[in-house]
Figure 1 (cartoon, rainbow, N blue to C red):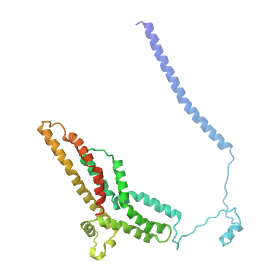
Figure 2 (cartoon, one colour):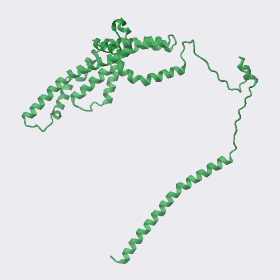
Figure 3 (cartoon, rainbow, N blue to C red):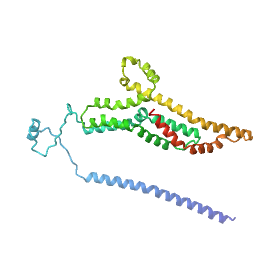
Figure 4 (cartoon, rainbow, N blue to C red):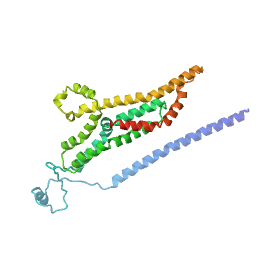
Length: 301
């Protein structure tokens, strides 16, 4: 390669770098110029525009003075501010209704889990998926949606009674808030007590230093005792159902594992071979229909 060729290549490279530098400078200058132009325009607008002033005076006109004394408003040019009280009335203001609705919506997930059949259903469905060894199939969204609709079906009579005895009378102003809460919690307490074991109730009565004989009636037990007792009773029932569900699938795992060992295929995971047989057994036995049907019947026995 000659010296002239080398010089030409070096010159081309230098020219290219210079062109890139010039372009970068132009690119950098454009946003700066735009910002400066915008600032100048804003300065001109604020300088040219006429300032506006607001004056506050302590003068009270005759109409306003008359309104203070109780006379009717005859001047529409004044701004009136009235603050009224709802004391002594059973009607519920719109703002208070919105506040109560937002509070209920924020606590809805906790209420759904604690005082309904949702806990037992979702735990049992999780045991079904684990026993089948399908990992993420069905996905969590499907299981939660299925558990939610089953819960609505089971709790529909309870929710209807709560609506008829507490919500509607309270919204129409027939009863006060304390009476509505007492009437609304009564159907839920009846449902929870029907599903709660006496041993669990006694446990939380002892924790709260409360004697059952002093209460006299199950319906008089505080909600703070019924809810945790109901939850651990639901967990116990769900774990019993899960154990029963596991038994046939464990048998399939044992048969497949022993077959693979007898064939000398010890390096092959038994779960890989047993999973299709589990799914086949579950489908042939119409597993979803049996599980959901027996799960719903467990709340009425």
